[in-house]
Length: 299
Image 1: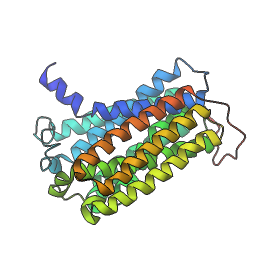
Image 2: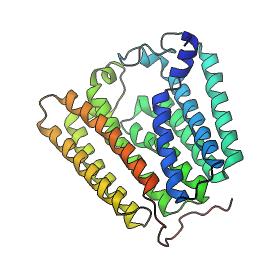
Image 3: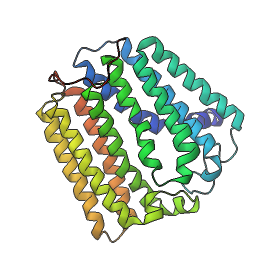
Image 4: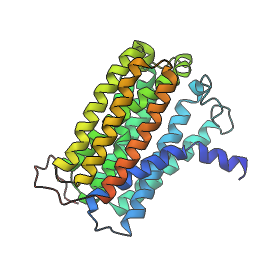
């Protein structure tokens, strides 16, 4: 692969795009309940992926200076000046517009709005301001991370109902211990870049307490999938097992002799957890029980 093409591919963070693609598919299949529109599915997934890629490129543009201070990111194309800033901004804009246009053609206003709001939160609210100024950046940024599965779900249902609230809760809550784990095992990088994440500003002990609390809340949210009638008991069993294992790993951090290694293992397990849960939501769907619609939209 020519080096230039590789740089443009990597600046869009394909790993993050793929992860969001899986979660978007989970939301779509959960809402579809086996009645999959073969034409809408690829359009929705491609559209969401393009917008996510757009956000990743914009994020690289914003972070190009602090990326040079971090071992993990200093070799990124924008940090090294391999892609000029105006070209990267144009690239991100094209990706975003193409994704939104595809979603507009294939879905409804609610789904498009969710993806657009997620992009704005990630690029403007999180990347441009909060990441450098607040320990609560990850909390607000988690809303952007929940946008793909939420959009996949609402693209099918056309409304913001109990299922949408559950998905929003699950994916937002999941990201908090996931992000804190990154900050612990990449502690030196975040310190060098002066990024005020919770482990850096309040210490790893405070981060561990928050991780345990967020994992407990995440477990409660995943149980609501079955309690609300959206998934079967197989998902309940799998989600409970994963949640308890993740909670045990987080709790073991209080006695960890090597905090960096512990945090890295917790981070890896968090990815495994959300991947398996996404698969379960995709295959173990049921007809939901009647519930109050919080916000309706007629496509």
